[in-house]
Length: 142
Image (tube, rainbow, N blue to C red; front, side, top):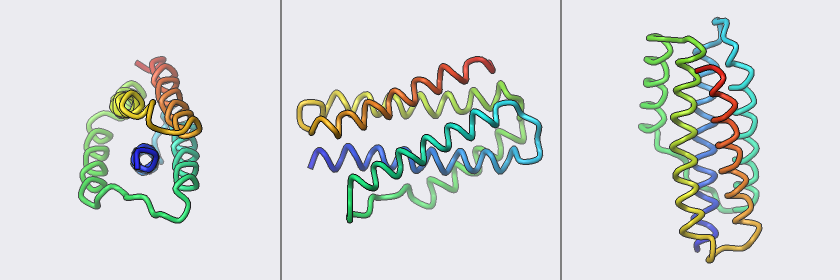
């Protein structure tokens, strides 16, 4: 049960990260932002973790974020990009999202580290490491 909960959390977070990155890239399509290359790399990583988590869950379909959650995220991103689409503002928005995700997975790791298999724990720790590394990468834009 704990294995499934931890992997579902990774899937859900990676899925939402993918969605928001794609939305952000769409909103920045005709803009000349240097941060777009890093954003594309983050998207690829989120998609990779999404696939790994889905593969781990095998035939069980993981839960997605609700339509309302995605809709609100989309509106929030559009509002922020319209207000300020500078690399600094975009990096700040990404750092905030990655920080929330890293805090959540770090908490889950602490809760489950003695209850899950080593490979599941490694997936969670790799996900945390990815988020922390991307936060550091994006700081150059602040």
